[in-house]
Image (cartoon, rainbow, N blue to C red):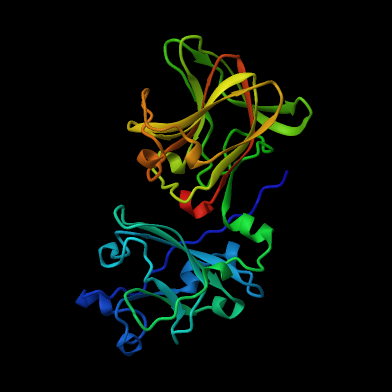
Length: 322
């Protein structure tokens, strides 16, 4: 199994205009924005890393918006008045992945053709501008190969083909096990996957007759990260084991879904909508944890061993977890 290359797409901010006088200053001249009602200009240099700079083919950049870099109070609940365009007002295809005015969070994907990837190229995000033509969101990913979209919108947590239990996340966090007074667990180790599966997998043994034991991996060294755009967590698992897959916000609560696995390798996909509603035991539900996840965890009971392999987050980019 090969490690995938992931794309780093930090936001670059050059201009904000919404009645904030000092914020009019940016790298260009003010005459360029004299007629702009509300806008922000982005330099491609600040959005495309070396991982995502194909030059000869289109690519997609991600804008991550929150209260620190966008005035959500001045835009509608759906963001329907948002447009993305070249400086000459030619529309650029874009797609709103999600838009939450109340939480002041949004995510926008912007298609950049080869001519838009040259150093110094700038484009404009506009809102409340009645004369702007809205682009076709269906064009954002059109004709781009599945392999490119896969690389841009997924993060390999671990495939366990390397020698250590350091994950492949940006901060290379280490896998861990936790248990209370009623359980025990071994330190996670990497071993041959077995049972007809090639390569290596993560393994740990446990005893937890009266409660749950769990293994997991931290995101960004345990610093809370938003997984709002998550489509699914996909992994392979074998037991036999009663398994609860969870997203943990340390000291606050978790969201999980429970499955029972047998001794054969099974590919599982867990989507946010699959997670249990808030309830007992510290389960605060997906909406309670999605913007501040610290760990991905695998709770186990029954059985005595669990094996995990090829764990991947879909709907994310590696930069989301830096």
